Length: 178
Image (cartoon, rainbow, N blue to C red; front, side, top):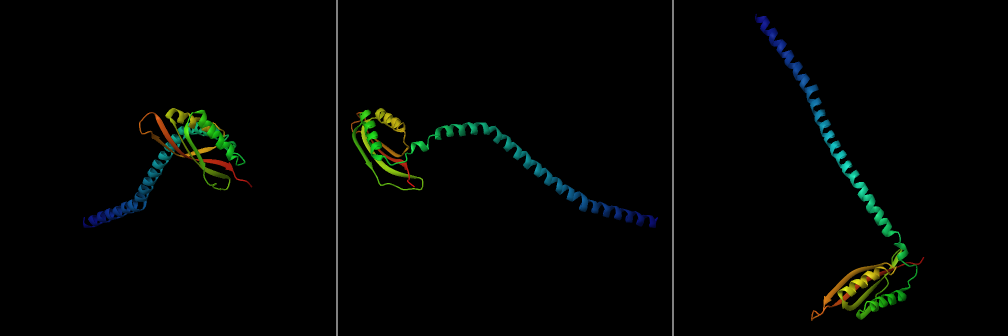
């Protein structure tokens, strides 16, 4: 019997060692690999969901792109090859007169040179009703030349009689020579 107990202890020891080796060298590495696979799968699910959400946005973005392309088709055509600045300023003056704006002042600044386009800052001042000023700005966009309005300052008259003083800083572009 004594021999049997030591034999049983030896068998249990060998079985314990086999189980230990199994856990250490097979089960734990497989468990680690499984957790890595689960993590990779979760990342793929997130990536696929993001891709599907992005794919749903594609038609909207494509439509926005088409609208922008239509708007920008004639962008370069609105920037003349030559300066022709005096004629354009007289057209602005005519617009102010057409909308019955008073106390007109248009003062060009110094030419700012760049690679493709040169620009001329212009300060404009006038006085009129708010609807007249908005109509003036609306027609200013239709003159066929790129004008960027940088600053607009509107001030009510002291008596609040409906007259508004306008001060605007704008940039007018033309293509650089050479």
